[in-house]
Length: 148
Image (cartoon, rainbow, N blue to C red; front, side, top):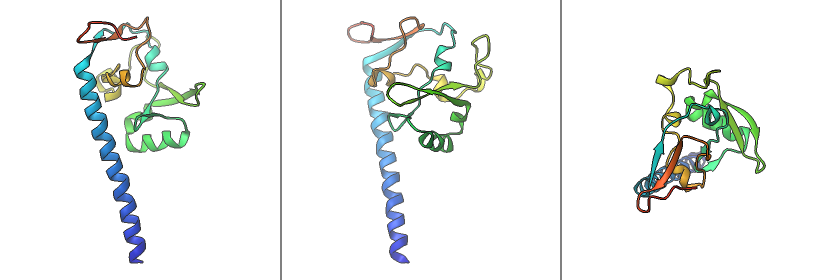
């Protein structure tokens, strides 16, 4: 009985430690990318980014409904996204429930952090930059060149 408790505790501790290390890694990578890259531009209110959203869990794009459910359990704000399809790599993409017909957010003042910070500098890390016709873009602070 005691061994089962210790084994269970150790497993939980390892999972927690892995989660903390992942957060620290993401934080330092974000800070590093923030030093090099800068977001510019403004929203054109086309609504495409709200209708075709990719979600990441520990840096990896969500590719199963099980992963999706686990993410929603840990962050209730993600419940506003519905699975819309699967891309050619098996990764799920989502649409927000709160995008109106006029392409405006119906809960703009209360939108989650994911939406408030879009597009996020960390996208550059994954090679996911806004589309050419999006009003936002990233530039390298040192060279002034647009990231494509």
